[in-house]
Length: 232
Length: 177
Image (cartoon, rainbow over all chains, first blue to last red; front, side):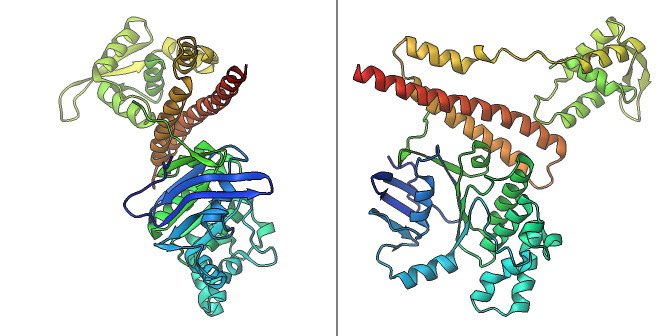
């Protein structure tokens, strides 16, 4: 099955992905494709292989078999240095808990990827402020993550993931720790901002209401992409 | 949904005519089916017949003459009573999806295939509703009304997921028996 296929030339594609941890096969031949600017939800029960799929597609984990292609290039063949450069410049990642650096303010957290890429501190902070504005948390810019609400911190984490202008943002249960109102604010901000920036989003979630923000859904079941219902 | 009580509710803020009531209904309840003019006028006539509303007069406002209605004291009492009554918890177990799964099992059909197709249709509707509520400038009535539908569809989905998982277990048991 390859419900994720997109013949228009996907930006990111995984083909026949297999990954085992010890005796546990997390992925058993998963196929998925993401087009440029597309928001794709990957859903499935706990243990269905969602996070492993994301780790393979983002180059964090190398699959045991199968291949991942980004913009026509196979990730398997890339040396670690190039892979890490790709992850830093083209990919953005957000997890369930945003993993902001607790000692830094929101502005400095968002500015950090720009500074690491060589932009000076003043310009980085100014750009970071603009991205916090887009996510509606500029007023919290001088707060540290522990001083912000969960939803505010998560919006700052999204700003950090998008600040470098990545082509793909990987979001693993980005609203998993939030109540429904905060979840709605985070998802609305993510979808609007990603669409304006033309950024593709791979959204991992077990929550149908979160998946409904995406353009399309693929469902994982036991490590493979499950056939979606087709009305005859 | 009781159209007569909704119209009485809209009349609570002051006398109004049928066209205005229809317009305000459609604005207040954006996810509801728009009221047909015929339905508005029929309902207003019944409210008058039952003593819950009365004709206030006519208003032309430069255009065609329109009949103005207002709620009577009895209408106001009826509205207060209705608004405070709890809605009966619906007998959801008799819903169509459940019935189709049961019938499909009874007739050696494909309940799993049906549940997948139903799930896809539910997700499609949830994407439409989410796009409506996440649109820039969506007002709160629109958001809340979409949320109501989304939460109900989500409950259906969770039930379908659990049911599909149980169908798989049942098939496995039958195969190994």
